[in-house]
Amino acid sequence: MLHLLKSGQWTASRSSGPGGQHRDKASTRAELTIDRDSLAALEPALADRLAAALDLDQRPLRISVQDERSLSRNQEIAVERLAELVAEALAPPPPARRPTRPSRARREARLASKARRGADKRLRRPPNDEA
Image 1 (cartoon, rainbow, N blue to C red):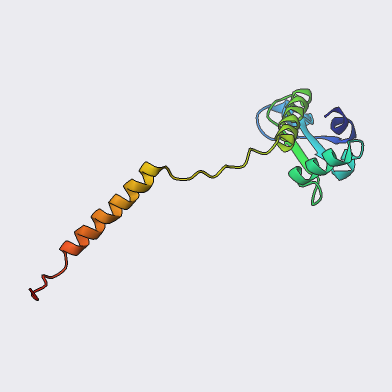
Image 2 (cartoon, rainbow, N blue to C red; image 1 turned 180 degrees about the vertical axis):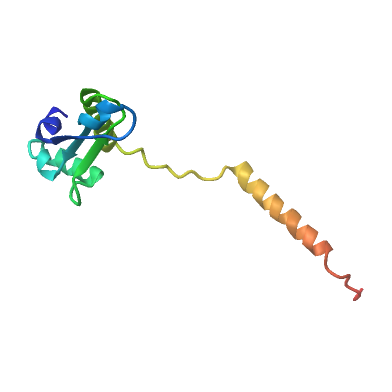
């Protein structure tokens, strides 16, 4: 995680939103850019997994924050968001669903229901006058 922060590029620019004159003069928007080359110091398997999850092969990851009025606080929020993204990307996949068979009672209930439907439909037929 620290390596990503060191190898990523920070830029600051003017942000929109509240702040009055301060907003017009100070660069408080924090933007962190991380590309595929930033993962070079990580072990290859980990780097590949992160790159695939964050789609770094197609485009760099940009985290832009302008929620607060101070640049340092916006940078802290960007680091928190990066940590969340990395944690999501490296989380193990959920276990595969193990298929289960319907219970005997469930199978019998299904067959009884089909028999009831069939009986209802038989009653709708016109009477048979051959007897």
